[in-house]
Length: 332
Image (tube, rainbow, N blue to C red; front, side):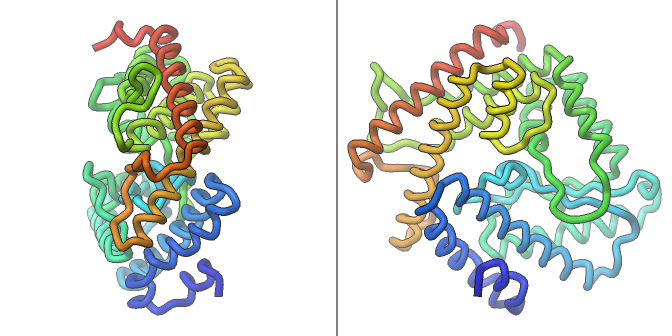
């Protein structure tokens, strides 16, 4: 039985107990083909699990009182998942139902039940609390929130926006066009883009004298996160709607916000870093250790160390170009 079929058919106890192990096995098989495809495959199965858990919660709580959407955020929203994934999600419900107190109570309970079930399946709580049990609001409230982030940006608002700008509907019938339009308006909000650019250059690859500094490297903060942030910035500046990081880089090349060569170089770097992270996580899980984002350089081949170094140089060079282009020193 394939993993998706198993997720749909397994009994509740087996599903939550064995999910993490079954997912790691499937990811290992997928990694042999393509690291980015493995990330998309993991996201697809996680989506199926989420829908299964939502359906169970609805069966316990009763039918939802109005149309709604369960939103995947962060890496799940981008379909770029690894084995070390905490929870990032939210709920939006129909604006005309917001005044009824029982509506908010229903979706608070739905968010709480699904969040807890995901924890039992192996997904830690989001340290920042960006989960549906906390973030459930009407579409009108979401529109006001997105307007505040983009039209009246602040440093703290950008931190929140970075999580929510990768939203994707996983379940439900509520349309997302109202916030889609607000996000596209970011192309005409210079201060917001400058703050996003400053965030994109915050995480610096650990390079010293052209070489990787240290014996181990956090692949997320040292390479993957900067590429995600740069790609998001470029696609927002171009007013386009792609969410997958390589797709964003391709779209940015079409709008002229990065050169075709630069987009290709960052995409290659993203692929190298994604492969090394998932490979390292599978090695950790196989050894009975928890999955992390850290790779030990002595566990890499000479070719892998060379590819990693090249990837980090690509990230740093694009960060430097972004600092100059967006004048990141001009905002506080």
